[in-house]
Structure formats: structure tokens, C-alpha cells
Image 1 (cartoon, rainbow, N blue to C red):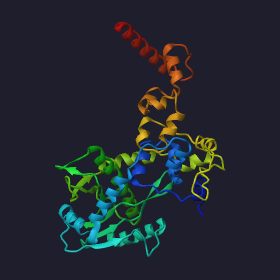
Image 2 (image 1 turned 30 degrees about the vertical axis):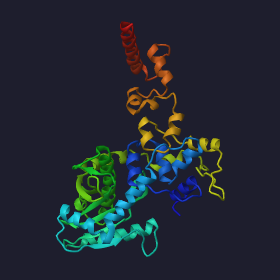
Image 3 (image 1 turned 30 degrees about the horizontal axis):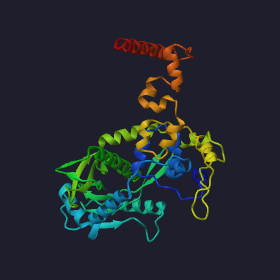
Image 4 (image 1 turned 60 degrees about the vertical axis):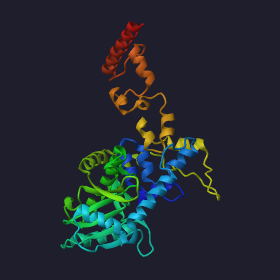
Length: 375
């Protein structure tokens, strides 16, 4: 077994790993300096279960109703060999052929393992990319992978459409509605970022096969319900900006080996489930294990990471709790108490703190004068 995989398995414990997806990678790249999230995601740890055992259950996530609605809409779009989707693709991508081949890659001969599905996906895409005819092929739930901080994360886009003008197109199916031609900007932006992850992963796969980057189009097909009905509509979304941001953020992620080398050999997040699947790991013991890995909390984490409430409690009194921009502006001063002491002149600046201390004293003076003027 790969030593890295074996170490990650021991850190995760006895449960099956939770797979990365485009949503978790997008969230990870929004905070690339967080070693805790990077390690837990790499090991496939159920962060929600860990946070719950620590007494800080996650306060976000899709409701089961939203998940059911999304699954129902995807099933509708793909029904009858994706006939409804095919019509949309003909309109948006210019597919002129009467029929399109359809491959379901959710399993391979009954085998649903990630490695087998990835190998099958790669073989089919290699064959399709080598075909010089402008044929149309739909790959349903292919398995891709993307290198994240020194390890491979497996990804499963909704669908890949091939071929229009000699290019592959990623198709992302979302259940949020497009009303009068307009969709929620936040949801659209999130969908674009997640789709960019799939484009990047597919480009890496085809690059290994010797194909240029532009074999995979930067225009993603976003399929959503139109208005207040379930009738689907398709929109082309340009994800070049998101691809640029993802490349930059992924390059900044700490290599996994560097994190692991600094950890105790026996570290594990195993929750010690009993026969009734109830976690028995003492919370204090688990807290000690989790606290071994440095985190990089900011208020933004509350909407993207299951560990956010634990990390917020842990960071109480630190400048990181005030947000990344505040922490960075304070020049590495990590304690709010130290910031206040430097501003009021009750603390002597340490080495390298002279400049920030001067700025803090000036800001404190201005604040005092303003308050005195109001009084």
C-alpha cells in the first residue's frame, strides 16, 4: 500500500473515506493556509461528525429537501437516455447529429470503486479524443481526479458532453431556478467555481494523453429549471476567471507531506464507533488530537467548513477571529490583547512590531480624539 494512503487511513480511522467534490475543493482553495482542513479533507474525515463529537455541530449544509429536489431534477434531465438534455445541447453547442452515444460510468461492470471508474473514464475519453469525426458522446457521472497538495482527490461531475467542434464540454446540473433569464448571482458564481474544478481535472487527464488544454472548453453548460416550472434551460458559462483563481490557490496549498511530518505518529481522528454506530471517543481526547494541527480560522469559514464553530471557539481572543484582512493588516500580531496593549502604549513592542505598534498608537489616538469630540 502507498505509505501516504496508509497514513491517511490511520488518521481517518475505521470508517470509509468521504470523497472530495468540487464544492469542498472550492472551499479549500478559499483558505489555502489551513492545514487542519487540508489534512482532514485529504484523509476523507467526516468533519461534521468530528465537530459534533467535540460539541460544535456544523450549522450549514443543504437540507434533505434541497438534495431530493436536486436529485429529482437531474433524473428528469437524464431520463430516456438524456433526451431532454440532448435537445438543449444541440441548441447550445450546435450538435447537428441525430443521435448521440451515451455511456453511464457510475460503475464498471458492477464495480463502483473510484480507481476502476477513473481508469474506465480515462480509456473512454482517450478513445473519444482520438476520434476525428465530429461525433456526439455523453459520459454520465465520469470519475476524474485532481492533485491537491500532493495527493489525488477523485471528482464526479454530473456529465461531460462530447463532441461539439472537437471540444469536450462539462455539463453541470443545478436545481436553482432561472427566473426571467436571471439566476441568483451567488449560486451561479458557486456553480461556476465548482464547474471550473471539473474543467481543470479533465484538462489534466487529457494532458496526460497528449492533448492540448483547449481540448476541454472553458465554456461550461449550466442546466437549471426555467422560471417556476421544472422545464430545463441551458446556459453557457465562461469559467476562465475561476480557472485562474483555482490554479493560483491550489499552488499555495501546503504540501501534505509537510503537514504529516510535523504530526505525532499515532495521531488519529477515529471516533471509535460501537456496534450501534455511536461515537465513543472522549471529546477531550479528540480535541487534543484536532488541536495538534494548525488551523487558519476566519469568519468566512462559517459558511464553508463543518469545523468552523470549533475553530472559532479555539481562536477566541486572536486576531484571526476578526477576519483575514484584519489579521493581515495587523502584521502578524496574533493576540487581540497584544493589539490593544500596543495601541494604548501599555506594552513594549517586540522585535519586528515597532512599525505596527506606531500605526496602532496613531489609530488609538485618532479614535480617542473622535470620541472626545462627540462627547
